[in-house]
Length: 491
Picture 1 (cartoon, helix red, strand yellow):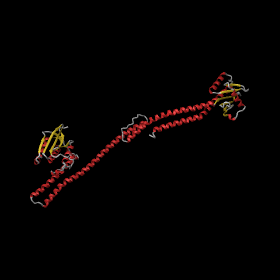
Picture 2 (spheres, rainbow, N blue to C red; picture 1 turned 180 degrees about the horizontal axis):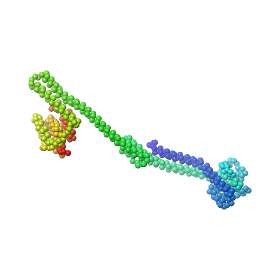
Picture 3 (cartoon, rainbow, N blue to C red; picture 1 turned 60 degrees about the horizontal axis):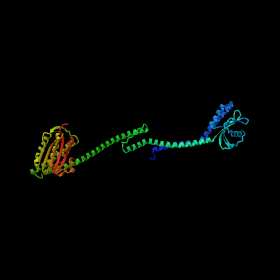
Picture 4 (cartoon, rainbow, N blue to C red; picture 1 turned 120 degrees about the horizontal axis):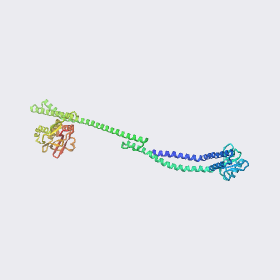
């Protein structure tokens, strides 16, 4: 990342540290020498005070005082020369005192040029100054003047050592500072990476959360502000996941409700269209034959009876369809109560088959019934009778070829399966899932021929779903089998 916090932190810390070290080096480079000189002034002035105090107290001849003075001069690299009033040496710190003696003469008799000495401090009986030696071209820091006893003196220390010390100190500081900058830069870079790693982890978590991936969790265990933020991010992720899940559930339910409403609207439209279509033909027939009777088209009794039979037959069909629609409506909307009771299903099926015996004889259909009773089941007896009646009626109306109808009752564990098979043409595979829809007819001409309305199998579907039991249809090469199951024992 071009503008990452890691780089900004490292650059900021390294920059501040580098500027600080450079400033320190510049202060050291340009002001350390002056500081050394000020310090030397203080040291050489203290040495003068010790000397002046000793002379005032008459200790100049004492060995202890001489030793103390020699120690000060050796420690601070000070050269000392004291001359008595007659011009003879009285006290000096090294054997080469003649140079200091000449320097003192020149000062006393004011033979120096102004440019050779620069006065730093003017005291009472002494002067602290910078002076240059013509012979060695070396600069010195000097204290020169008269002691309280009236004896002239001179004390000096070389400034070259001060400059060398300042230069050496600046050079050493530069080396140490450079090494410190390098080492500190490496440490700061490592620290920046360590501090930025959890922030990068949080950035990655937030990116994944933006993509609705809530499996990402902050795993760094830190007891600081970043750790607190990470824990809050985890809580936010869990809350968002739960909220989105609830929203999706609500949206899914809303979508189902919308689809259900659309489906109901479509069913209502189809229902009205189908009812109108189914009622149109019988109403037209009733109207036509009624007008014929009114206009006395045929006055003979046989014709009038025929017209009345047609009107009554069509009215009966309409009445049957309306009853079936009302029954189906109650089943589909849950208004009909399912009453579970124990009864002999073999006896029920046998009664239905007995009621259609005349139709079987008229159509020369052979019936095969396989079921030995009694077989007791738990179900709504009236609704099961509706299912069996619809299956048998459907088989009679579509029986063909060998004209055989086979009804079987079989035990299947805790269930009892009832099947009705008829020989004839199989149902096309494309229509197998549609035959349970209201008013759907595979062969409309044949259905109209026997007065079917396409509601029977819809009633079967509604009945079996109201009892939460399985039902279905199966094609064979020579016919079709419809079946359903009911409970064979009480639960």
